Image (tube, rainbow, N blue to C red):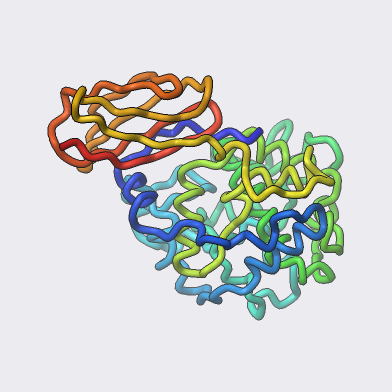
Length: 347
């Protein structure tokens, strides 16, 4: 089961989710439904491969939307630096190293793909080099308190690896899954040091056993966050393709995990909970339908971003809102497996 982080959003994040960016278009993933294993991966490839090619050197402009922290700085997964403007101390970093897919990466569509391109601290990026992902043991050869480079301790590979912060390990895993799916036509070109541990020169399963075990571990223990959801929509607005492993985290299980050999149903069990919110003026209450036998926590925000009320609700339970004035509000509801957001109007 894929679990979602319980991160309460700033109002800017909530408004982005509800209003600013396009969501999954109707029918977007239809051709992948009912497929499994290699056929499923190739169907996803067909869906996402044809997208708008952006200009690599203008990516910092895109980053002000895709990777802009609500605190007013670039969201850097490689350091704790909070830079408010683009400087020479920052790089445009390919999470999956560009040297892995071509000797002339600048000539490929993948080179400027925002789903794999992030703002990063230049020093950390240099230390990362093109090492494979892993979990560092002992004294790192490089660390800045966020990322590490050093000797791998994860079973299956002996060598130097790059380890991101726990908060972003799932982000890296889903990014790698995206790249090998979107660009499975690059399979014959996978090369360089890092691929010795992570990639075969094939389209499926493409990840070696070591990589499958590592990426699935990170994918499961660091589930999709609000940051990734918003970024996926923002990149889609620029590039016209999506990361399916953010939209449907369960796909990783169908391709490499516990659901291999099963046909994808076109849904994610973590997202199937029926959810709706209805205001009843007669008793000044919200009817919050979550799911059978599911306890949920909720928070109610004003449109101005002020947290007004929070608490616990059970399945199909009334939430008293008699202290709220007439107007539009946002409610965020969490169960143990999902996060839902809705507007409601008090009149």
